[in-house]
Image 1 (spheres, rainbow, N blue to C red):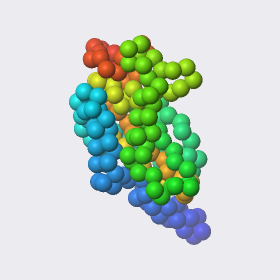
Image 2 (cartoon, rainbow, N blue to C red):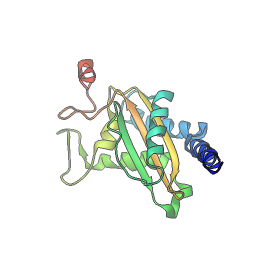
Image 3 (cartoon, helix red, strand yellow):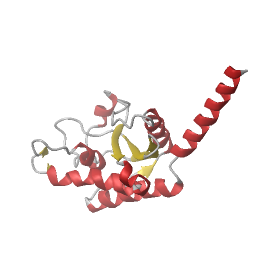
Image 4 (cartoon, helix red, strand yellow):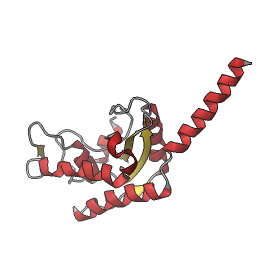
Length: 176
């Protein structure tokens, strides 16, 4: 009987975790609007929000709900990860994650398609990848007190040597 009781406790815990990881409609709108505002300002077409990508993001976020590790899924999509400290945990919003990724623009040289030495630009260039059409994201409380957010992008970007601002041969996306 004890084993059966523990089983049901874990099912309830699992359902509670699933409930907490679903991005609300407001979150989805905020993720999409913040991405699209930056894209349109850069002359890129806006993204559409994709539930398949959001489900994938949710699954990956759930896999780090306890350890808060910023480890990529190595899946078939482009991916940006965000972790916000517990000090501001309940105040981190989807726009905060997207703005953090967009701040990398200051390190990216569009003319040479390079990032300043010692800096990161891949989050920014993924958001700006011209061929990417769809985004889906997840947001959850990690380890009970920190914020963890994941966005997935399709088609993925950041192919070495290619500029995010160019249109690319669709053949490159079938080679992964």
